[in-house]
Image (cartoon, rainbow, N blue to C red):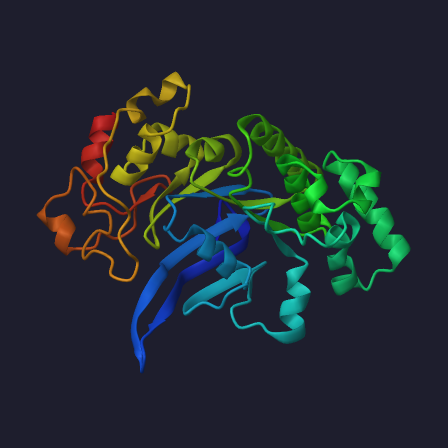
Length: 334
């Protein structure tokens, strides 16, 4: 069980790994290393961001924390208790405390169920709620997320993308969870709708005293909502810091590349906005590069980067970075 600043983590993971076997005709021919030794923590009523490209392992990590998939190794703690091996009734009881807002509101809602049944189903499963109680609580929650009471009798296809996302948010909050994972909550929405959904999530967090883990490829969204940020690349954490520190003084070339490609109108970030080119696509997690996993795309890579994997080290004030050349970028930032 870890803590920072005297505050015990609500949820944390230690050296978490998830390897998916690749099966040949007669045997397992290899493994896809989706998450490869990740340790993170999220404190109560905090919003923590995980940012990285598609294929970096962000969503797999989120599903591991919720025990939607089983880890290959490592430990997961919730409120100080090891939940890695929970099963049966104990795991089911935990479900109502941890929820997820899925990425695509079009595919995460059952097309043949009315909103009342979609949002209210967890009340039946976890609390054995009766029909009258379900209708009352669903109506109340729909109002909180900016919808009307009569919307509970409609089907998902009768709503816009933004409205569907509000329904998904309502379903995640109906059990009054302590911890919510937001998996790319605005990626499929128009820009004008994105801002409204982010404002809604902010207000609900304060009202319900929620703890968020925000998974996204959009570093601007992370900058707006998160207290701290983990940068993930090819199954590993390559940098971690407070949001302000990470945006102003990124020390990993991958973080710098993500920032330089994101239009953020903030003059304080001028030194982080210098264009950092990265070549090619993210390598396959089946056969990750030796040494630093970013070495095959890094414009600054040296011989050592291709042969030795850099450890994730604290360079001061809780700012963690996994890069052999971080001191070079720190001097450049200064």
